[in-house]
Length: 193
Image 1 (cartoon, one colour):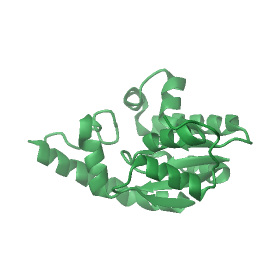
Image 2 (cartoon, helix red, strand yellow):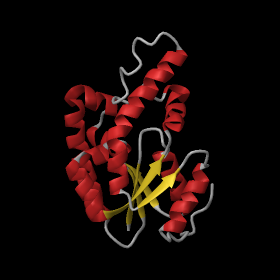
Image 3 (cartoon, helix red, strand yellow):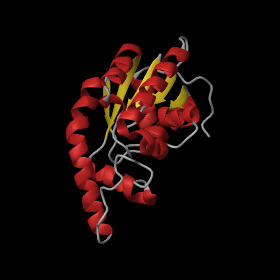
Image 4 (tube, helix red, strand yellow):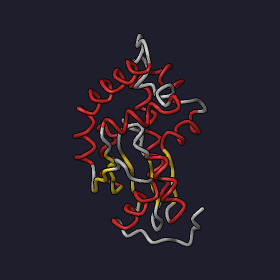
């Protein structure tokens, strides 16, 4: 069975996916697969073809991964924050996967994305904070950008989800175990490192 993690940038899809992979399932991060396939970074892909060019590459990579996934094993696939905004990608996920929406409050997303310069490598947030005079103004600009994007994406995530997990204040390990319990994914002898 193929399971996908969806949610906004900074909700922990990749980190939580790696936690599940330690216990039970194979894990693929769609953004990492795109970078490997294209031989260039996500910001480079956006710079060359804009969002439309990136979504086309993302859609093609998703289709290939789902085709190659096969059956008889548990695969967890972390989607990009905007993957489901593409109608074809949504149809692929609905047709081949069980989808888990990792829902986070705007406060959590701002905090997660503000730590360690997380916005610098995210083209959809690029420029949102340009002109901000100080750290507080940057956070406010980021909050406004996330709120605007979530007004569009939130309903899409919810409609695609087979299960919604609210992540605020929870550890990645706790969320990974909820995913395994909810979908009855057995531990497959993988060690907890």
